[in-house]
Amino acid sequence: MWFDQFATPIGQLTVAVDASGVRQVLFDAGDGRFGVGSDWQRDPTATRAAREQLLAYFAGERRPFSLPLAPAGTPFQQRLWLALADIPFGTLCSYAELAQRVGCPRALRAVGAAAGRNPLPILLPCHRVVGSDGSLTGFSAGLPRKQWLLAHEGVHTVALL
Image (cartoon, rainbow, N blue to C red; front, top):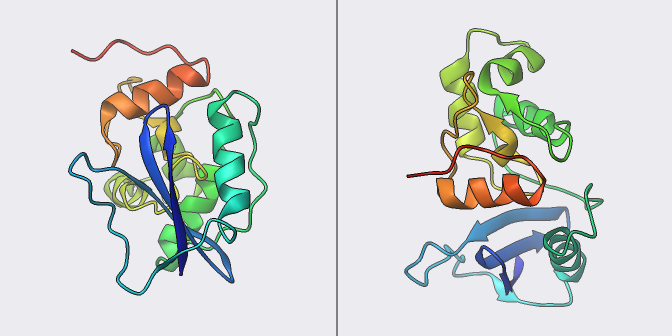
């Protein structure tokens, strides 16, 4: 696996890729650790397309991503993560709606758990998923980052206290 790290408006990101595509997007946990695998090799050339597209997104110059994605997960997680890709830029989807989209309307907890394990945040936009009442719920990188990403996309939410 090849990786690179770079600064963004919401902190340092690590992008990891292999021959199949982008495997992970990791946020700085605030303690300087990113979860980089011991067998990963730093290679800015291998990660260039992902880095450039993410930086263009942060600059307001890109909405859809066109990268080969290769997240590893169960068949249910894979189905859910693909459904995340269908949530348009600047729009919200509730966990209940997402559960309907993947054909499991009663599986709200499973949907939430799978969204929380999304290895490709931003690229597969789990930040666009909210509670049924529109509340910001769950985001592996923290609710302030989720709120920032939504505001960046023009979605106004209630300020976090």
